[in-house]
Image (cartoon, rainbow, N blue to C red; front, side, top):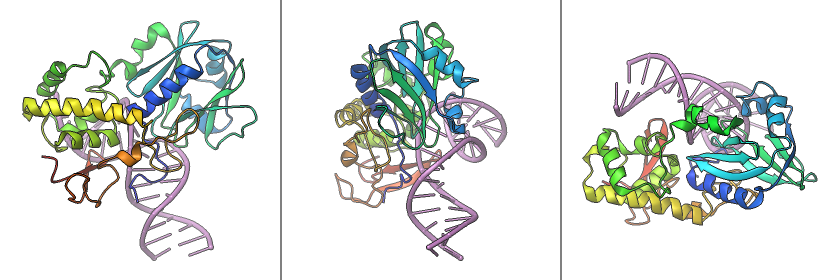
Length: 290
DNA sequence: GTTTAACCCTGCACGC
DNA sequence: TGCGTGCAGGGTTAAA
């Protein structure tokens, strides 16, 4: 079975972007009637930057959502008074559209009810995710957001720039690809998939790549991320990541290495191997990646 | 500067 | 069968 047990969400750039697009279509223009921060203790953990439930709710109630943006793995919901609701999914967070009639799923921590009907629920068993409201002009003061690097989908993400950044660092590729301050959006799944697509080993030094290898890595990053979005993200098992409407993504079937330990490489039939890289399980093909 | 490990948390797999 | 233990993950932080 997949090593990603326990219903991991593993929410990375493609999953966040799918939810962002769903939100853009569905909640922009809606006005918030009220916010229910659920009574369980972990709900406070989710809104950990706010001292009290009421303080969080009051900043959202009555506001209209005007725009939905994304920075790395963070979703930003802009409000009509200039505030921003920031959402991070951690590894098991979900935003789900619901209605009053629908029963509350376990680990539902926050329910945002709309004037127009329906609601938006934040569900997160492991509470590594969080939500907070901040003034739009103070977004830059939020440390975690401020240091987030460019992501592979941005227009300004060029091969030349990427090449220079790689050369400037002397780090193994896998941890570097997962470093949100270097490039944002990639986590454990997609960094492995990108490295396989580029034919590069996890432990290649960033400043040792030929220009051809840099190009392969650059292209792999964009293609893997765009493909995963097209398939609406990776859902590894029943409890894992789902979109705004509770529907799983289809990219798991497309994964080339992640979760495939011992299975034949789809390209060369060599069994996929794993090892621990900075505390994360990494999957790679010893034949195709060098 | 880079790398490692610990922390937060829950639910599952595993072994006794 | 039932329980305890270990592990998985993202991101930050501290220490090596």
